[in-house]
Amino acid sequence: MALEPIFGVTTQNFQAEVVQRSRDVTVILYFWTDQAAVSVEMKETLEQLAGQYQGKFVLGEVDVAKEPMIAQQLRVRGVPSLKVLRDGQLVDELEGPQGEAVLREMMDRLTMSSSEKLRDDLQVFLDEKRYDQALAMLQQALQGEPDNPSFKVELADLLILTGDLDSARQLLASLDEAIEERDRPAARLEFMEEAAGLPTRAELLSSITENHDDLEARYGLCVRDAVEERFEEALELAMDILRRDREFRDEIGRKTMIRIFSLLGKGSELAKQYRRRMFNFLH
Image (cartoon, rainbow, N blue to C red; front, top):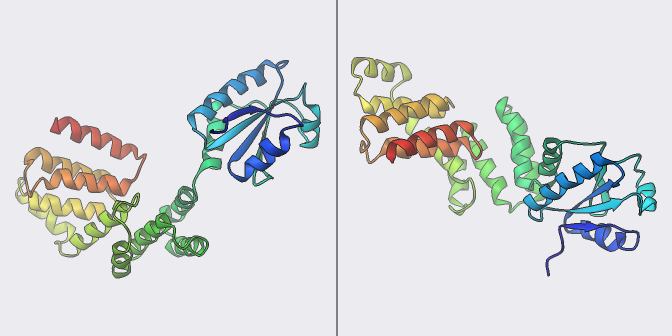
């Protein structure tokens, strides 16, 4: 039978329900009392979040009026208060009343997978084009988890960004096509390879100026924009191709937009905006 995601904590069940359980799942201990309205309100918010996160953490509720010894042992100075345990150790804490946004940010951080955390940390270096430091971080991560497919996806993408296309091809060939986000480096590699055989940006712009209906030139410029991470410009060009001739080069406008969505990744507002526009046009 599945263990309850929310449970009351007592001195009698603390070892089994909190310490032992924390070896398998993150345990958030919430210290509260019904004598403080703000702690009752925060308790309700935490219970709602526990349901939304569907077992990614469990919530142990400690009524300090009934279990003062637990609060004393964990040095709780006031209510409401949060203590987070993992592998029997205290790893995080929050004191005082907190809003839902702060609590959700904490839970996202605590429940993030190693792959998600790596991607989050890598993005700082990638945004600043500090590829050497990103590569060092990836190599360290792979030493700890050499078979992690998500880490290999990030490595393939970084190899492409640094121009090592041959190594990226080999790595991508070794990865199952069903691996999550493999399509991101695969799309980036395709764009890079296409761009290598294209006219310069100036030549493409000249061709479009001379002939507004030159869809080949528009597509070439779209590819160059995608390679240079000018994603909004690339999507606008692909959308323009789709509007001008939906069937051009076997629906290359639509297919290119999908490839750019892959580059933008999950949660991209730009991808959501243009996905809606594409859907509305097609339907």
